[in-house]
Image 1 (cartoon, rainbow, N blue to C red):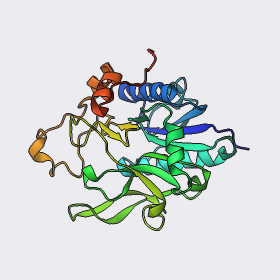
Image 2 (image 1 turned 30 degrees about the horizontal axis):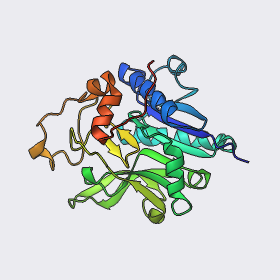
Image 3 (image 1 turned 90 degrees about the horizontal axis):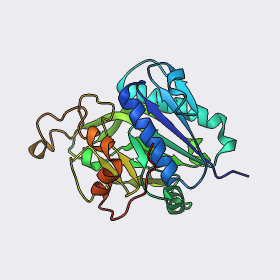
Image 4 (image 1 turned 60 degrees about the horizontal axis):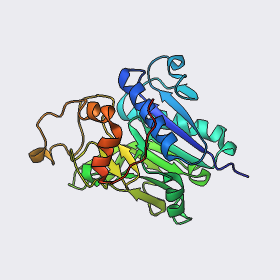
Length: 262
């Protein structure tokens, strides 16, 4: 019989200041909002795994490639590890470095909504003109985990008619698309059309949280309402200074989960 435990896996580019800050925030929110036991593992694309191990229970090393290639390698590495320990867990969650749950008892609420109708829940970003499911957050049980794979390639056209060629989730992007619960952007207050997003009133995803150059598919589309140059670390200082207040503003919540001080 399954334990009801959750296994969370996150992908980090390195052991830099930003990676460490996001990991600590991710763990704080997971602890504050998850009512079942969970374990956390990290994939490092660069850097010494031993220097990261005091934060995350298991640290796996993934080297080679960059961008979407590195992301795909990290996701596959997480899945392989998840499958090795699958009998110890009931739920599985894949996260980008700058994504985490923000709603109290999120796991029970989300699992109840899946309720046999859908195999997994993941983010869909029409705000970035995307038709493909985005792997920054993927929640599932073992039935879906066993099928999961990733590929970089063309997935048709985006919402503006351009070719959408990027990392996508197999086989759920095409033949099993009706088995996916899409988590859509639900911000009640926007500080940016593409950054600092709340999905389904349940997950936060910062985007470009590593401080990399801001470059997203719909940047030109939103150009009339965005600064011409968005700083790589846009809004990171603000959320790091007081994450509860910042997220409360985005969601419009009158109350918010208390996150224990470090």
